[in-house]
Length: 582
Image 1: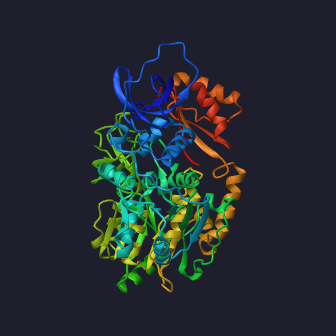
Image 2: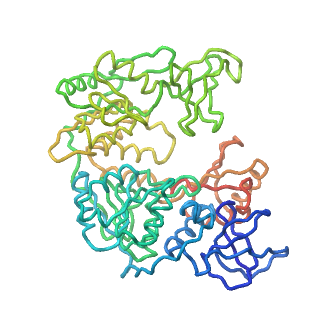
């Protein structure tokens, strides 16, 4: 008979092979692709025989049947379809390399499926300590539970501080080099409770309940080939299993807020106090210039006075500016050409007195070129000063100033801390009395439909993270008109912000009411692809630069799948569609 096989290592759509025996879906087989042997997964049988020679499979790895739990398998097929990457790429993203390489393992023990039908609950409370108490009470119940956190650090912290009697039944699911060991531990049901970062949504633990903490956090997006939210995959998996899904956090995601099958729409019972939110007009600020860097960092008189007062009382302050390095861009003074990364083509930040340039995207560095690559001019200038420049400025006014960034030692953080929004990680430990956003308008410059929601979420987090009832933390926001409009929502709470945001999203058919897709294609195929979308009645946003991707905004993925099938996904040079949202 003929079978379709997904080969993870080849990033191909399913290939067809001849098989002399009856073989079930999900079983791993050995196949030959371009005269090299690879492990693949049987995705089904096919009746139509193509008009070219079909190879036989080389061998069967899983002679006792499919080793992949049915919910994981179903989730992989779903992700491969909606993410336009194919089953093979989805399986590669979800499974340890040893599994996709064909390492022999025994089938899992039989576990009774969750009894009952899928249902959902939610728990939204801004106080972290109260949510932790809620989770601990939930874990006291006997059900097998998968609990997801937005980062490895938050998952590890929760696991480390569990009560001993619960911790004895739990495991911390980790990725990287130890992923196979964690996967096998969950696979053999060694622990009733699995605690993990977003990648833990693939843990083969047969959960009867899935809990998602801080479910609105954008860190749940699983990048690379999938680019889908682990929250959505967890919901799909809970449906397949007939399990319970609990979404929790300080505020709900837009998708959770409008979900029609929820037992109850989330309601906000606790709102920020207006007296703790300070709005400082950025026009009333001192302009600190930095030699060799164009632009300035606004420091309002309100910010400076409040910071001095709190530091003098021996409390901590965090200033947030989402720009690392000395400047966020380096350009030629003659022609304006920006120095870009040799790997990814993105503009680079300056460090080490402008002598070293660093790419935040691919994390590679290079020396400042001796001359402009475009016009040959030998003088460069920075644009938009970053945290390193800010440090030199504030040292003139305050003592005990630190930068918190990747690699910082948390134990040394005290006094005035300069950081990107990552500095919010410190809130639970150092209990800052003031958190200041230095230029909220700059945060809103990012041209993306998710920007307003993500920035509001961070503002809301900065108000509540690590805070207890009756504490007196202040949030200071420096902004102009656009930033002030968003900042004013903070005292009204997400109950006011979310409906207004959803109204705009629905008007422009943006998620969660539609999908945004990025389309990469070869220059040769670009015209054909544009014509195919036009014939399908799908409007394509074309930037006009053939080196840039195309974008489409649709209500249903089925509209795009029909075009996608015309070109296939066998060749990465033909058509690559990435789900940029869901």
